[in-house]
Amino acid sequence: MKIEIKYRDGHVVEVEADTFMKAVEAHKANLRRADLAGADLTGADLAGADLTRANLTGADLARANLARANLARANLSMANLTGADLYEANLSEADLYEADLARADLAGADLTRADLADADLTMANLTGADLTWADLRGANTKGAVELIIRS
Image (cartoon, rainbow, N blue to C red; front, side, top):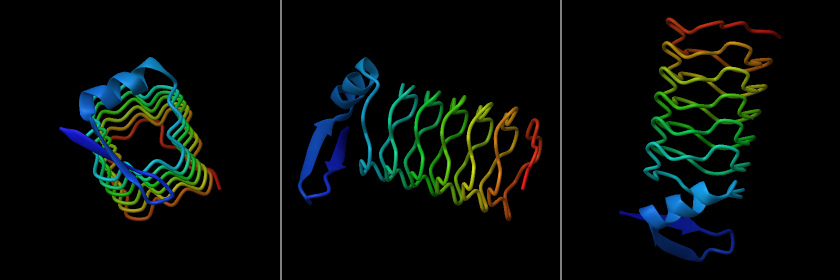
């Protein structure tokens, strides 16, 4: 499988998924503004990666390790984050519209001003997460642990 990486200047590079994942796992990757829309990153180790303003629309990040990753202002709308580890991740102002976060670990995550409208947070761990000014309209929070909303 190949992953297509689109740069701001318009050029596109295709790399083998295995090669891409090995490079990412070897470093705290800088993927700022990367266009990874629709990418299959199932089980990827992206702990500590900088994904600020990255486009991950519709990406499959099921069971991915995103602990302490910076996803500030990232577009994760309609992404599959089922069972993902987002422990202490920065998701401030992230777009998580219709994202699947079922059984995700969001303990200690910063979700300040995040758009979680219509997101699935079923059985998600939100212990210590900051949801100040987060938009949870229509979100499914059934069974979510420690859902405390401050405004």
